[in-house]
Image (cartoon, rainbow, N blue to C red; front, top):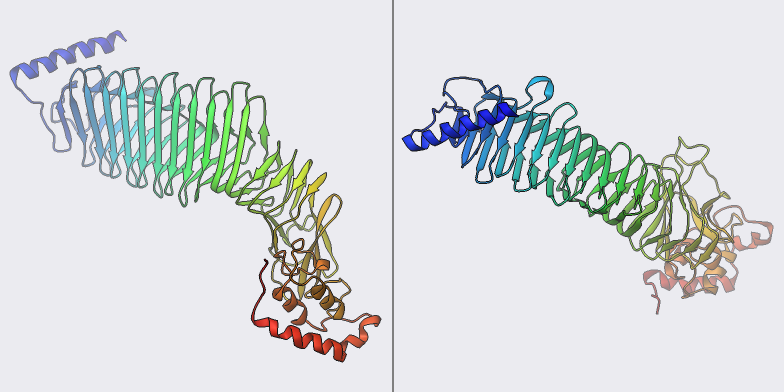
Length: 542
């Protein structure tokens, strides 16, 4: 520290002398310093090896341009050192580097130490250090812009990248830029504010260990327009008194973690997953972990993929607002869940989701896949609700892979303790020769495989199936229940359901009692003639 102070005192003297004498620093074509910086560049060295402490904007305004493949190396770099200083460093162009690592990756870079600092990394330029601090001290204001393919800020070794360390920090990664480090924090200390944005395809923030939004202070992370963040763990709202907000939005935008993603660890945390955004969590997702934790997940579009792991609720306050988008591959959801829209998809592609309390499907869909060839012992998704199941919305049955079923098969796809209501609609796959229906049993819902148009399940499409349709004509019935006349799955008996029967008339092997139905009697012909005129129109529900 004494050596750094001596360097700074000498730099202050040189800067003051230069101002009094009206001199300007020597300028190299690719290393261009200006204003107040220290030590003074001789205009010749290439690369410029400072060796110790390099300050740009030490006590007053200063700047440094590193261009045309030039290199500057030092042990510690500071942009905007004193509270009265403003510093700007721009590293631009392929091969242009500013290396602050020093010996054994121990060097640091401060952008906005006590003053105001800006670091621009552009057009393939690269900056290296161990720890990178944006807004280092309470009066410090730091801004880092990383733009363009090949433009990188590398925090080497076990380095921290802190956005808003003890002051105010802002970082923007755009147009294919990259930031990397071992740990990443936004709003690192109590009372600080940090904001980070990762935007555009190819733009990425990589944290080998954890990426924390609102570590001890206030942090905001936006991953948008195809940007990406990766980390071993993700934390939003870490310590008591902190506030973190992370938003993933726009096509191709993603935050991938390798293990856990905690929302509201000990502070207030909010995760927003918006249309086009995606969050992948192969480990568990705790919400409201500690007693002081307050976590909220807003799934309002995009995809939250738990990859078979659990959503876990602990001692704090927790909210999960599911209004749109996709909730995929949840192993166990540890509380009650209300779904207002979007799709709940248990499988990945085939899997089981357990909801440990009540599940209310107020809108959107439950998506069940079946027929995956590699899943011989579990050929279909299942949803297990340990509490009450309240149904509206829709059931969407999707067939993937080959068909490991035959006519007459039945699959229990949803289990529950108690049930209220039925699906508003059911969508079945279109497979030649196969018809599907659902049955609502005491503690489960089954998917039934039959002959297309066969509502009775006797293996033949004939007069009994037609009578079911005519007996329930123009009525609202439980969606997808064949014995109540709804093979179309829309919850209403009308022309589409009639077409299922008449379009497959006499299909299958008639049981002995229906053998005469192969040649319709005159009364039946009359019924067919009357209903035949309905093919061109469908009566809607009143």
